[in-house]
Image 1: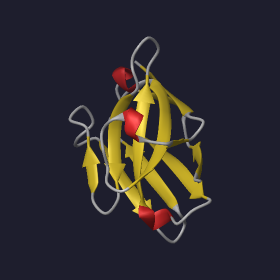
Image 2: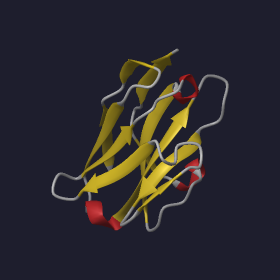
Image 3: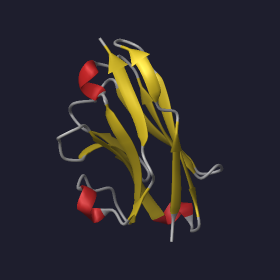
Image 4: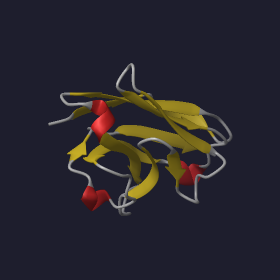
Length: 120
């Protein structure tokens, strides 16, 4: 079992930055691939970025967002720069044993989500 707690969401102007954090507990952190997903109103949950050893990023955020992982703190981060109104969504942290996959259905463990709102 893995427990995930996100933090760091909020309201920011377009062009601004936010950093999301996800603290994991309950199991051996290094055994899990971690992912960030987001869901906007009326849309499906979509993959944003994932990491086990190296980070991978969706094309829509490549060059603007960076995922990282601190094994000493059992925490992952999502640094979000040059935010756009299209980035407005609830952001979720997720975990799965093994490798990163860009499909929400492959992740068994989820955080409660944190709202990111980008004003234009």
